[in-house]
Amino acid sequence: QVQLVESGGGLVQAGGSLRLSCTASGLTFRLYSMGWFRQAPGKEREFVTAISWNIGSTYYEDSVKGRFTISRDNAKNTVYLQMNSLKPEDTAVYYCAAPEKGYGMTSSSRNDYGYWGQGTQVTVSS
Image (cartoon, rainbow, N blue to C red; front, side, top):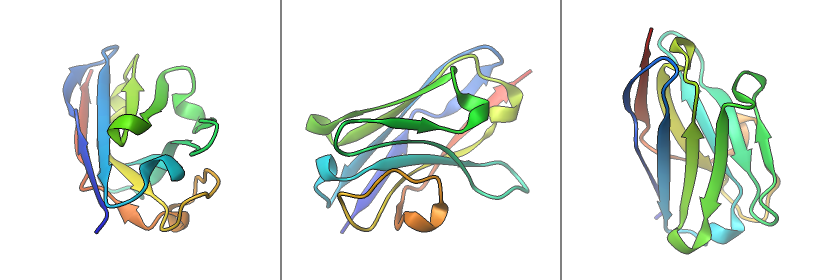
């Protein structure tokens, strides 16, 4: 049974930083590309960033480029999201996600991810 467990969310002032973690179990983590998505109240879940399983290539949504960094530690089965220079519009529930099968390319589409964490709330005050 695949489980993804996020942690690290919280309340931070604009301009501050947070680091989210997502620890996976039930899959061979090193073979899975991983993604982060977010969902603000009243909005659809949107892509934030993804990292590939093989060479660790990364892909970012335009609004977070230069502020957010995704990384992974395969020895710990964990993917991270370092968020700097946070803005009020970054406020959302953040979800990590994994595809149903390994060896896949990174993707920005929710439809390409079959496993989701429970989410962690990030609130940025102005």
